[in-house]
Length: 354
Image 1 (spheres, rainbow, N blue to C red):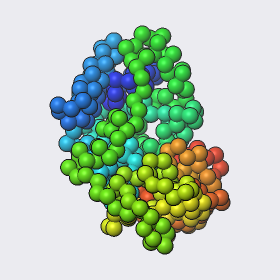
Image 2: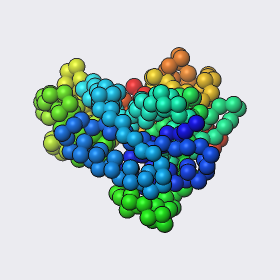
Image 3: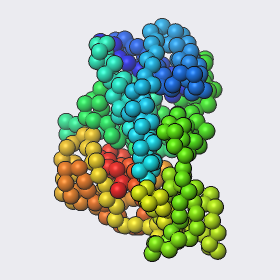
């Protein structure tokens, strides 16, 4: 049975191919590049370039390469989610959803349809077998760890996953690529969100929805009007710079209300919370790992270092996090990823911050 390896055209997937070919010698490989951008866009041109690079790497290793064009599926699963969350006054993380629905969802379905087994990717993460379940484990190189981005996978998806880069550093990956003369060896890493390459979220939302932001009021926590803003979805919780208002002191975005088009400003101290509610709880491994009250370590955003707390399960899909220390700016729409308290390395679950 062949295995599918996701080939982005970058150095990580290219080295994953080399390592998989070496370690899985008796298992054939098929390189697949997902082209997710709409036709006649700069992003589509980048997709075509990536397909060319991925095909070249596969050819150099005697591996079959295929391209799968799936803009419609990507738009429905990821772009519509992204814009919908922003328009609802929340701050999404589309990469988490993309991993679940596209890289291991759509590509997983493609693998099944083509009689393939594993899904191999260039994610910096590891897998661990504990108590009969497959767990996501942090990468050996914590600076590159992507376990947070994989926390919404299912147990079925994890059982078919393989992450060859989990024990390596980025420097080691580039060295392997250089030693093997891969065309991607010196290719720059992709930055920001793939469908927002310039980082301008507001323009991306306008392009996707045809809607422009509408000016509204900044208010304080008592409801007093402080001034005008560009539109509630131009801001995110915790933001200080770029507000376009002078109050004689630093002001921070505390919350947003889509229904009234208002943005609440206040002091930085008002951003800190010890209690955070989460919904849409996902348990990728043991379905009972978070039953009752569980001491754990939680990351409230990808770049968060993680903090100790107690998770109180409130329903099948909801929970309350009680942190030992106040946390700055837990942001509605972002994901809270829950790790075990003993090692802080194994993902127990994840939920959406409310």
